[in-house]
Image (spheres, rainbow, N blue to C red):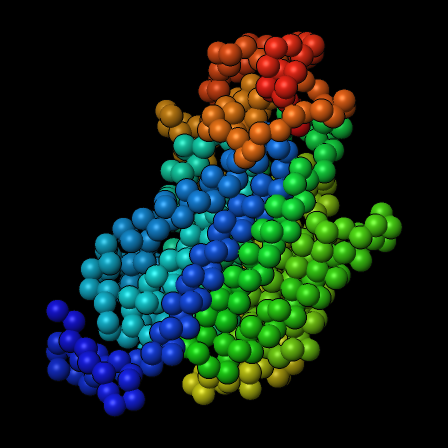
Length: 485
């Protein structure tokens, strides 16, 4: 039984069983973290909608499905051993299993802050774990099976995310002890997921039709992209503001710089696109806003508003041009996750080392840091580079290892067949669609595929060069044909 009571002011008091001094929790702090948990959760379907809108319509449901299924897999992993591996006592690299299946995770002060109980810290951090996995699996877009991806999420969170979270946020972690600054997840969330998506894209190879006009398509649903951005931007107040782990002035400041960096990032990317097309792009603004949000994440509890403007601008600028990297490297990064999250997270970590202010960190009345480069703490930039680079290297190497091990395990090969790409991942592996539609565009190529289409990863018996376009007939006239769009 948990021994708790309330004092005259209404604060919650926890009395440890060992008779040590009681812990006092302010109900306002607890209420804010509960709300922040819900805010971060709503970001997860936001990621799914954002990704879905950028894809072709025949693959639209797959990303929405993986985002919500990822909540289930990631939440179970966190309960099973994820929380213990990330925040349990252990080494400078990973925790032990003292908190296996949330054993003894109750009302004692949390690892993150003595102002909230461990159980509350656990569910808040669960949302970070889940959304990181969902961000990473965008690398599977349009050319992967669904079932093995869910296995991948569990394994990846265990041996990629948990160690990075441990060394970044656990007081026993090596970058935490070194003095690295990462307020809300520049390395554990964004660098790790962006780099993992890049490794996934390399492993899966290029989509069918890569380098041809077939893949020179526009997002099939810009409204999904905008709606996804709205949910992400909305939830990011809980993502960054909640990372103060208390309802205090530092949380407010984190919300201010979050909103400002997103705004500047969106405007920057939109203007960069306008200079080429002379049109105002909604997708461009949304991409820039997300980049700005990514860049401010590690810095949000350490910088003032002028620094947020600089971070939003520089991150969006760098991410915009980083979208060209995939062409130089010949990697089919379908959703530019590496450019937005990998590069954006790296830029944000470095700029945290430049702009971190001791005065802003002290807004909570507790935190003391020496500041960043402009506070004449020059070594901080080196700490940030070590943190970001180690996260990049670990995520890329271990993700690649996971992918190739799964490749040789029967039933876990991730690559979709060519036929599945043609009919669409939604039809091939889900048997459901984001919505019914009529393919009326005369430029669309209609492909009639036998009803017994093979959707395994064995080589197709009919090569791409042997395809024949057939006239629509029967149900196909009403949109029943499979459309390579």
